[in-house]
Image (cartoon, rainbow, N blue to C red; front, side, top):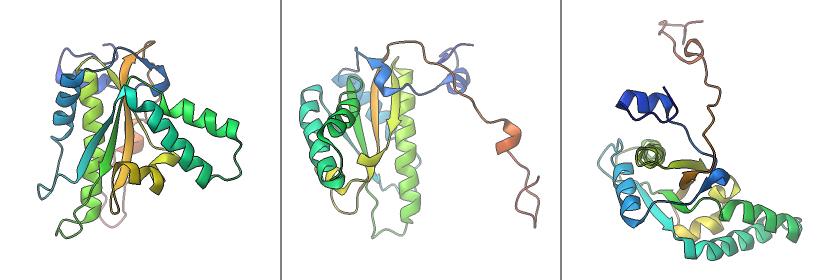
Length: 200
């Protein structure tokens, strides 16, 4: 079995892994493929049918504007950083991979569904987007970092009450994806022991 084996659904899930955005190159998905990925990403558990997430694509000809946004935000939020450090941080982040989707968590605060459940749904949407990218022959990397928590960056994509769930970079691996260490099943799967929290 090889990484991203698509012979069966279980084989695919057992071998799927993310790609490092800096190692994702052209070609990226075309407009129709991107629409399909987002439609698949939206097929995620969603208590209350609220669709508490949005997907904003940053087109290739918008990367300079995206970089300028990050640069301006960093200059304000890290006043002690040098221009060289800011430029390096922005360049290393803004221009990765041929495709970029900003996934926003958009909880409906007036709903009876807890905000936490809606935020979990946004995370599941990010995961589904990665699955869709892999299934269509690409690889994706889900990044967070300082920009995810910057109100200035958030305001360029959404509004108050929304949060950036992640930046999902998508493209073609420039080199084979390497497997990463995975936890032993015995470390993460436990049988419930009433009165004691978890066994072991």
